[in-house]
Image (cartoon, rainbow, N blue to C red):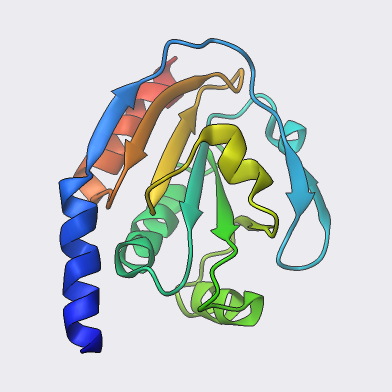
Length: 162
């Protein structure tokens, strides 16, 4: 049964796979509390292109994407920032998320979106979804569904160049 649910979620993610150009050039900002219970403000990343990754631990494509994000950060030191935004899933805990991130050596900041405020700001409907911000924190792209290494590298090049 669980295997069928996972297959369904993967297929659903593949069907919703999309990449959209965003034309709004307003600078994005938000704040929240990290999984380590520290305050975070996106302004801390000002001057850096940012990938905002919306995810949760019981989402198979979300988990599959984490190593790609970790590898991208290692390939682009001091060129990009990654910020995870953890969905408040009824099936997962913050501890589960922390343990999963530790297992993947994912040392990028993750904000727990307890009330869904950040998700609502970006109208997130599909997980995973990644929002790409240029160095001025303007949205340049949005990708919904699993993001493979090749496409992730391509989208990172676009935000680093801008």
